[in-house]
Length: 109
Length: 115
Image 1 (tube, rainbow over the protein chains, first blue to last red):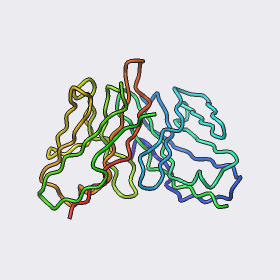
Image 2 (image 1 turned 30 degrees about the vertical axis):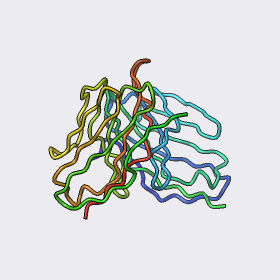
Image 3 (image 1 turned 180 degrees about the horizontal axis):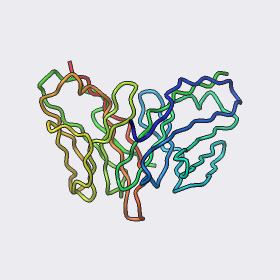
Image 4 (image 1 turned 90 degrees about the vertical axis):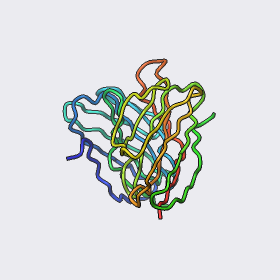
């Protein structure tokens, strides 16, 4: 079983919809939780990070971490076609960053 | 703002050849990570360096080696290339000077094709 599980999708929603992306994990040592966005043939781009449990909001994006359930989420409000990309959750304890499989998201105009 | 630079962007090699990938971190970043991403896969951690010393090792084959130089750039050397080595290779950088290095900034990647 992978340390980090993420539904690969694909996920297709209409423009303006609220998108919910999720990951679960098994390693209790993870303390830092990140979401990366990756466009085709590009490197992952850091979107948001959170430390331990809680919520963090940045514009249309909200990241939630529930350490008791080992569950993290990324919400995208008022989704735009430019949000179409693969979204990867990532987590780290000491040094190594462990990625989820990535969810391919398409926002339809 | 300056980003992570990787070269070359594309590389085609034959089986059993060698390849060298280069990574130039963001200025003042002291830590470099290497990842391998196969088609439709998540990035897999290979190896990392902090202040020119290897700091962590992941699923890097023995045929691969890497180092970080005095100017903090890093090179990934791959020998006896196999078809399965075809992938995107990403370098990421960060700095530990301000505390835990949870923000890794990725370069555009090198696409290696082994034929």
